[in-house]
Image 1 (cartoon, rainbow, N blue to C red):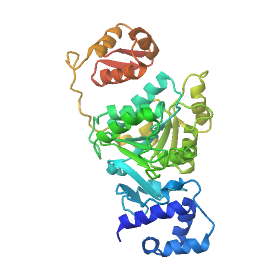
Image 2 (cartoon, rainbow, N blue to C red):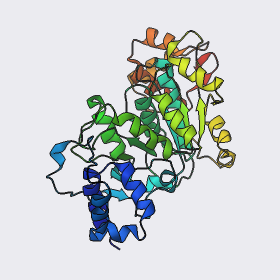
Image 3 (cartoon, rainbow, N blue to C red):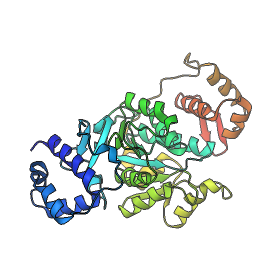
Image 4 (cartoon, helix red, strand yellow):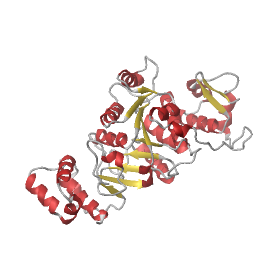
Length: 367
């Protein structure tokens, strides 16, 4: 049975009928794949649901023939088993990049768009360390915590032997792959592709990123993952929707605590009160999901040294500031004059290179 032909037929079916109707009907229909392919499934739906329409799909798609080659469908062997078993799975996943990442163990790292610099640094470090341990990081390519998580995954070239190689990050979009949102992350999306990561969407290329599609997108982020970690979230953050989906899907939920008077941590504190695991680093996440064996795998030693010529002027300036006593991220931002995102990337590079170490009081020179 030619799954590419079935996928094209599924595209047309999804343009006409809501996904939930299709899922219910597929579960009831014997030899559903063949029925989709020969058109008898569409005839069955027309008789059973004559007035049902997919009102959420942009009408301009109705006349365009499906021409997607990079798509994984319900009847493909490559369709991820974890995602197939959630309560409301997608029927199609359009993609760009390394589809092999769907075979690797993943953890979702999500959080607030309006995040703090410390929160972004925490997400960056967490994602970097998870990738270094062979775990794929899934997130939503949004501003704030999501973007920091993807950037951390890109920075975390694996220090251990891993399954699929490359960036080990999956970005799930709330619109079609050619409707990149937010625009500020177009460069980040391209970096993910260039470094062997993966972009995913259940929406066709012409579908814009509409508001109702982002909560739908969140169920895929959690559904692909063994666990979801919320780094920062207000009480009304969309990240709490991802956490709720994860719980409903039977996956682990973790949250990072923050200052008690910080609104961007209130959602995390609420999750912890409701039973989410409290975590502060990648090791605790791996222990929480029962992947302790990864922690004992032999690591590749870091080859940089304090005399490395790879330090640029900004990195050397930052290193000169970290001298004598631990300095917090905010202190370093004020004293260096560097942009927070740039400074965070430099700190990650310095930490990976063995120049600095992070402790409870901030950053200090590595001993």
